[in-house]
Image (tube, rainbow, N blue to C red; front, side, top):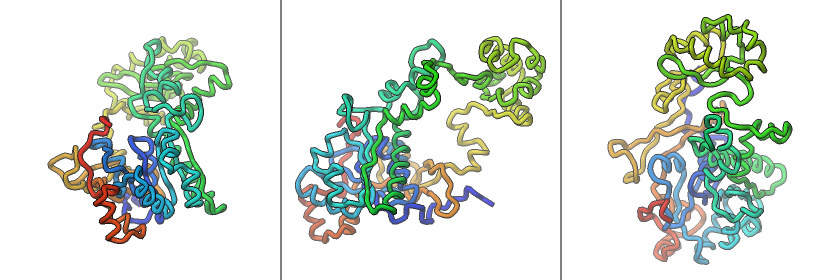
Length: 411
């Protein structure tokens, strides 16, 4: 049975759900992309003058969405928008708090027009409070959420994580909130406002480091590649690279597997607390043995000993790994003609799939990224506008079928 065979053309669990995506950058588009992967019809709504994240980054975030260009500032643009919102299940936005109110498209205004609407918001620091009006970005959330204080080698000063973790986390948490709100609407018939922030999501991901302070009164520090509280569990040098192993899952088996059974009898390493206290001495003993063989051999030996372990990969090695290939974590999708930043030699892109498998209503990547404005006429006609009305909206510059190239970072 091939559990990971692509089923991208089958209806997903959110088939029939319409989403308006007003968000930009990464956090909001991550939520909308996940809803699309789960089968929702996502319409990406942008003003004609606004750019997108360029190249592969934008392609991955905007895949399988439809693109509508509409200016919300003129009164006629807002009229069009309200008609669209009245036919929408979910709206996703990540404006700074107060912007949607000034535009007249905040949750109270849209809920009056569509009481079943689920209005999903991401902000940098929350919808209220002394920092609510500030612009939020992932590195700031990493700093203020505590992640940078526990990342990196001990005593080395703050380190940023290598990925935009608060963006991805807040988008994912918002998706969870939207799914819960859709379920609640089945019972109540009413939509609701669902919101999170980069800061809240980052703090929540701190998880057991956070509760070490909240419950134990301990301020966690940096632990480098080690587990912060138990040892040996981390990354160690081998003859040709590095190996990550959780030796605490069976220290005696680990010692025997690396050819050093005497370590399990050494009084310095008698119990977990001793091993944590004497971690540098134990590290030296372990790495002396691991330096005798290559990483691949240690993965095989430790696997036979039923110890969790794995090599440290670069990204090209990740996608070459046989287990990753078996999981089919990517999909190939068509590339829109003339897409900015696209590989010139290919009409396809390889992008990440949604990492959850559903047996009956599968998630899938149901298309590539849209050309800006490619679906403006289609979406407006579906909303009930006549051909003449759509022509007039485009002629007046309120809607558009294409957008001039514009750098997202020069707004």
